[in-house]
Amino acid sequence: MVAAIRRGGSDGDPGLYGPRSVTWQLHGDPVMWIAGVRALYLQALHPLAVRGITQNSDFREDAWGRLLRTARFVATLTYGTTEAAERAGAKVRGIHRRLSLTDPVTGVRHGVDEPELLLWVHCAEIDSYLHVLRRSGYPLTDAQADAYVAENVVSARLVGLDPAGVPADTAALAAYFTTVRPKLAATPEAREVDAFLRRPPVHALLVPAREVIWGRFASLAYGTLPPYAQALYGRPAPPPRVVTRRLRAMGGALRCIPPAVRWQLPPKHIMRAVERLGPGSRPSPYKMRRNAATLNSADAAGVRVWRARQR
Image 1: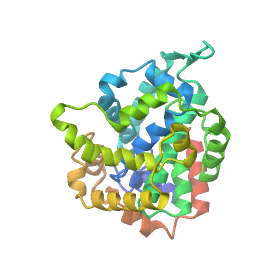
Image 2 (image 1 turned 90 degrees about the vertical axis):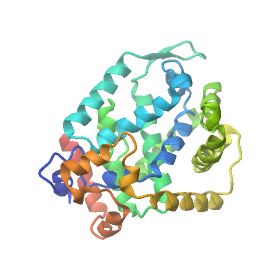
Image 3 (image 1 turned 180 degrees about the vertical axis):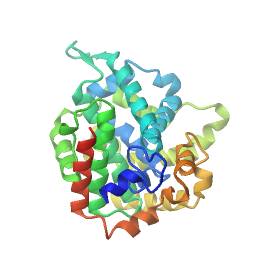
C-alpha cells in the first residue's frame, strides 16, 4: 500500500500524498469547511498563537481572504504537484521567519515560527479535520485515522517543524492535547476571533444570508469543540448528540451537491489534480469503505516509515 501511495495510480506527479492516501480522500469532502472553522476556534485559545495572528495580520479587514488563503495552502499541499507543495511550504516558512509577536503579559518577543506555536496550529488543524469528518458520518476506520495523522507529518515539515516531534497517530495526538491544555485560555484576542466567526463582516444585503447559512456553519463548528474549549469560551453548546445529528444532516446535504459543482469553487485544485492524474484519482468516501479491509495498523506504521524516508 505504501508504494501505491507514492505512485498515485498514474504517470503524472501524484504530489506529496497521492490518490491512494487517506488525506487525498478526506480533504475533498465539503465538511472540511466546517472543520476549518473549528480549527480556528481551537487555535485561538493558545494565547501566543492567537496574538501572532492579531499582531501580524489584517484578518479584521481581510478575514475572508485569510480563510481562502488557508484553504488554498491546504489544497496545494494535498492535490498539487510535489514542486508546487514544496514551493508553497517554502513561502510560508519565509513569511513566518520575518514575523514576531510580543507577549503583552511578559513583554517577551517570540518568533511566529517557534516550534511550540507551529505545532499547536498543526495539531489543532489535523484534530479538527479528523474529528469533524468522522463525526459527520464520513466512513473512516481507526487504522485509517492513524494513517491520516501519520501522512500529515509531511505537512508539518513543510511549515517548518521537525517531523520527529510531531504526533504520528491518534494516540500521540490526544496525548499532545492533554499536555498543552493547561496553557490554553480565552484571551481578549480569542474572544475577538470568536466574535468574528459568529458574525463576520459582510455587505448589508448579505446579512440575512450570513445569519441563515454562515450562522449554521459556525454554530456547528463551535458545537464540535471539546468541552474544555467551550468552557473556556464560556458559551453553551447543544448536547453532543444534537450536534452530531445536525452535523450528519449537514454532511449528508453537502455531499448531495455533485462533486463536479463543488470542485468548481476556488481554489479548484481537485479539478486540476483529476485532469493531471485521470478520473480514477477523484476523491470519494466510497474509496475509504472499499479500502478499509486492506488498511490496518501495519499499513499506518508503514506510512510513517515512508514519510520519514522522504524528509
